Image 1 (tube, rainbow, N blue to C red):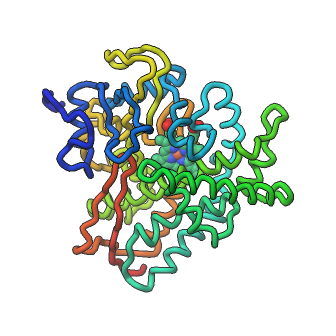
Image 2: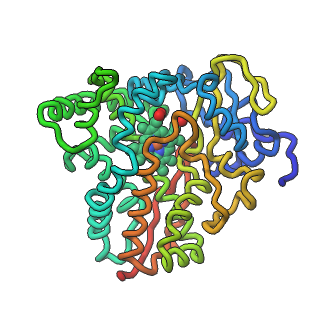
Image 3: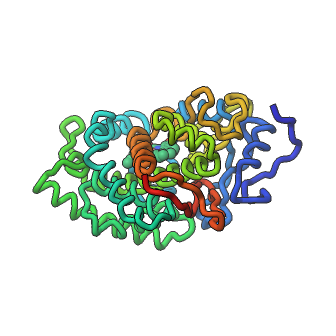
Length: 402
Ligand code: HEM
């Protein structure tokens, strides 16, 4: 265990290297599982979107406990933040309404669907992307690969034409980074609504084998989803499916490229990929925090939290909790397997987790099958940046062809 610290920084914006929040998380954990303050950097957030009374959970047990108690720690606060741009989504719903809506859309994300998506959609997309750069003997694996494949996969799953990729990728990024530019996010939200309304109409008259067609025909107690419910869900799915998956696969590649012995073991035995993917998600959590609204006066890990407070649940910190993992600050694909919390827990556990895992495995398998001797270029100096979304901005590599 680490020695206790007296006075850790009050917010992540105060730490010496804001690109690396992990020393801040560790200091906060040593001082207790929950504190009055925040792990968000609100320095660029407009005042009207900043919560006034914030608490943060940083230990595994506090984060896990809060995620599993949705009536006290509610997602309803998303209606006033990301919901302004996405509309009413399952993310902000609770109780039976959430359950009913989630049941409707989750059929499309079950492991059985992945059995056909893997060979028919994901593998061909990964191979086509590699075709585009393989002759060069070098690539930026973020720009040329990890940033590209999740967008193309989700576009295919939704049945959207490839020429629309740049439009909806830009709109998705504008929505998810709303805090930095609210007018741009509002415009993106409006553009996506109009775009999806056209696609919904198209699928209503000519259903196909894609997620939009499934949503158009889905029913709850004989009631169909409204157009608003469908395009709002689609506005959630785009950033949910793109941002996290491209970041987690970039993070995994970064860790493997900077731990060549572990990378070599995987190149020798692709069967190690699933445990490497889980360790990548634990060690470099792509989305380091989610938030909850506190609906009643309560207590978490001995800290009193009043009704009306906003609680940060720091997944990135929980995933490095030294009381759960030995050598928690080390990347080690061979460590004994214990579930991480990168997809959260409880009712709002990520709906796309099987898809995300499969996409990452297939993408890595494609790289390992076709390229060998993959190594970072010495002048590239890649780093993982960001909070709460984290990933490398570039991964310039050279390689040989198998
Ligand atoms: C490595 C990749 C991914 C990570 C780390 C991730 C992470 C998360 C997290 C942390 C949440 C919960 C948010 C909260 O509780 O406040 C969530 C929810 C969700 N995710 Fe993912 N996600 C990933 C990939 C995907 C993909 C590929 C899709 C779909 C294409 C997806 C769709 C969703 C949806 C629809 C929800 C809302 C579930 C609900 O509220 O019931 N995610 N995800």
